[in-house]
Amino acid sequence: MCIIAIKSAGTAVDWTILDNCEVANPDGAGYAYVRGDEVVIRKGFFDNETMLKALDNERIDQTETEIMFHFRIATHGKVAPATCHPFPMSENRKALCELDTTASMAVAHNGVIPFMPKDKMYSDTMQYISMYLAPLGEQIHNPAVRDVVEHSADSKLAIMTPNELYLLGSFIEDNGWTFSNASYEDDYLKPFASISTTYFPKKGSKKLGTSTKRVNREWYMGEEDLFNSGNEFDWNRYEKEYNSLEFCDSCQKQYDPATVDDSGLLTASDWYLCGDCIKDMDKIVKETF
Image 1 (cartoon, one colour):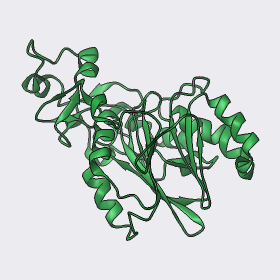
Image 2 (cartoon, rainbow, N blue to C red):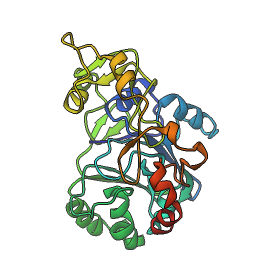
Image 3 (cartoon, rainbow, N blue to C red):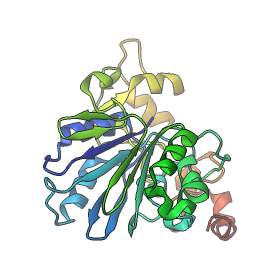
Image 4 (tube, helix red, strand yellow):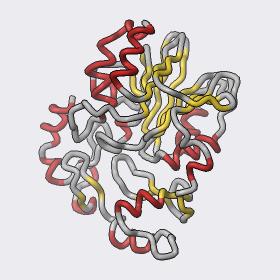
């Protein structure tokens, strides 16, 4: 699903809201804000504590600055820092992978764009921006063009520019915040069970991390039967059966990271590769960029 959460100027950052967004949408986060005549983009955060520290380092008035946050649930492309939102409005796929950058516009997306080609690394949003949205250039300021984009994407987009924030699709306004859906609300989190650790991918993996104390019980019951009859998460079983595995971000097969030299695990965009794919790393990077 994902969620776009925009804090308006004059509204304080509410980390309770952002924590809810993180738990319900755990596949990576980022934010954007305007600085002068450019938009600053920071992304690739897999826990709010890290994002809070990054935001504090911006040295901006967090209350008076409009900030666009995005929390991702992966439907296409890999779970990795590079596939987090927001993205610069660019046709260059390498630029879309940048974790700290500035641009003339920043784009965040909530939804699925079904007509994008399948790709092991690039999400539907990244492909849509590079192939369709970015080539429009300054025409995006034309309301008629934005109407066409909204109907063609059939989902929700937020486009931040130095002078205006464009919202395409239906959004919720709530006490100085604007949301693309209701997954920020406490009621939305009722299906989430309290456990000692929770699901947060570590730079491209689908392992559990230790960022919060809730996990989507329905999601896990659909993937693996890791809950006992009392609906408690069987952490010991997970540790034994799954926690030693990673998912290759190229071939998508599970592998034991102990069998791979750590120096070869990451490409420039923080994708995890198994031993077989590392052998073809040069080819993968050339095809990617």
